[in-house]
Image (cartoon, rainbow, N blue to C red):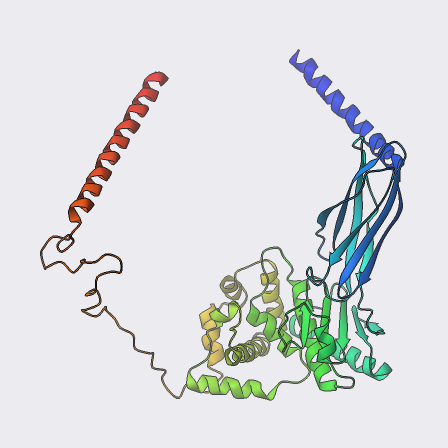
Length: 441
């Protein structure tokens, strides 16, 4: 009988599987999508509109699923509607609250359900969150599309040349290029850029890479060759490294990421060597292990962090070669901890690499004297009674711990009650255990 029941169950499941497509087809036939559109109004909103009709019964529910195409994650929103044979509904996504940078491609689809429970899902569609405030020109080379709106073709030539030259330097350093397309939006001024960044962004940001979206935004005045050669390669390096090391557990340490980005720039900044040598002489260099976390908020320390990062990455390239640097990047791609990655690829610990690199800088000229701190509490530290407990003082040597405490009998009584409760609880546990043991026999 058990075998017969098992076979019947299998048969039922097979029949249900065969009928499921028919049921879905019926749902698709009973609900017809008249139109499903999305309209971007950067930077304020994206509006999703839907019109649908049902033949058999009323449409009672609509759910919108949307998200950045590159992220492959969807947000589900139950959109209110008035049930009926024909429905029109809308969802407005406030992109000043739920921010997406210019050029983000968003995928979306609708799920509709009628009164009988039948559902239909619309085919995936896409909308580009385009910044239509400006008339953009564009050029594409080597998986990079550069957008600009001032300076004509000459500006476009400067921008695309900066991008390709930066990609060459990155490839020479780690043997990697862009695996997925990247869109670069170049604003002609910081004021224009402000309107494209997330609300309350800090004023000093001149460019930003959204590595999970494949988007770069920045401010470069038309014809500014130097800034183009600095900003675009820097942000492209973040994109290349993010694509190379993509994994769900973590990426390369900040010193490796920022060091490579600064190395990719067309021209080395003069302040780098000056700041490094000064910090080395004064004994103010930041330990490499500390640069594996977030960079300091202090401006001077942050600049020193960038300078050290660039110098360390360039030391790795010059000393160990591009193959080893690429192997290190691939170790980070495998979510290998920094110290283990350095040991495996270079045979060095973090501290050993740090010391090896520091030996290339000027020697420390003065000893940093640590600020003296008390090693023990002053004798009168507890002379004053704690706030709210008047009369508590320091007991006499060898005396009772409750000496000088007017309420010590109360404290002793509380301790005695606690001991009694502990003994009672222990006894109850022993009785319960014995009863369980007896029942088991």
